[in-house]
Length: 421
Image 1 (tube, rainbow, N blue to C red):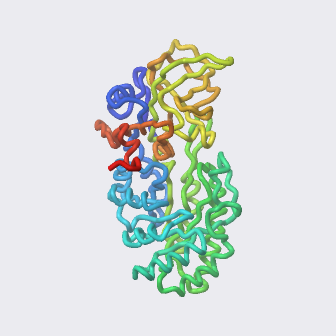
Image 2: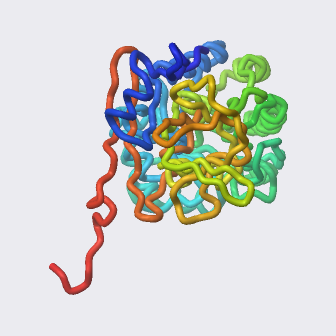
């Protein structure tokens, strides 16, 4: 696919405008998204898995901005949610309940009630206590709960960070796969549960199809066993976690290779396929624009101090995540120097890049932090009294402000000083 933020005449562009113009108009730091790139990613998924009945349930946790969710839902995609807040976002963006699946290990009674009333497609249940609480909530409302078990196949996926490996036995996620057949038998006999499918999610930022193939093999073994017991399933949810390239030397998941293993097996069994991509859809469609405030030399290092940091983009500090950083305006004569790009937060862990070779910018220059559309704004913080940044979405020749920059009153909204009215 095309670069959503190409360099033309020395300036990085977004649609019909430049990142420089957007930063001048809306200030910095600033998130910018390309909606056409998002649609292209969704079309790519649909094309790769064209041979099977498919529901793309976009992972809202990757980026839940209403403007993007609305455009994603307009393509026919659904939503993968993990909270009542994400359910509210998906519904507010126009995604119908019948295209929503609800994951997460800590669903509350209130969240179950909200989701049942919204008519969601399925709960991906992650523990036995959750399953029986859901049955009780469904009984109380008189609404059978559509369910799938999220099974844990004990597959350790090669993800970049231990926090993003979710399919191994020591993870908090999912039900041991060997328990699944007995639980499905109990579920099938419960009038308050509507058994619909089976779910697996093995991690995030995976670029090798083999772990997915291994997980599917284990899941289909359960599917076939249940069919023999007279418990047919409607769908297999293969989760998400499809890797994208953050750097020039990285690779992304080859969807065609994965589809070649998945589509024939599900078509043979007349099963629907649910996929839960998040980062793959929006990651490269977003960029964080931040302005250089100062240059500082200390301890033999050069620090590029910017107005955006870990409060705007937590991945480098939290996950050790790499994001390519480019100058918005090309300076071909600039000295290339190894620098740390750091933010204004009072933490040593506040950085966007460390020991990175960059053309040395000048104060006032803008930098573009690439592949920030996923787990960027959605993890943004108000720590240090920071105002979360605005978000802009470009669609061809149109520019939409889809979130205003917070103001100081937003920081204390909902708080009360005791003894005051």
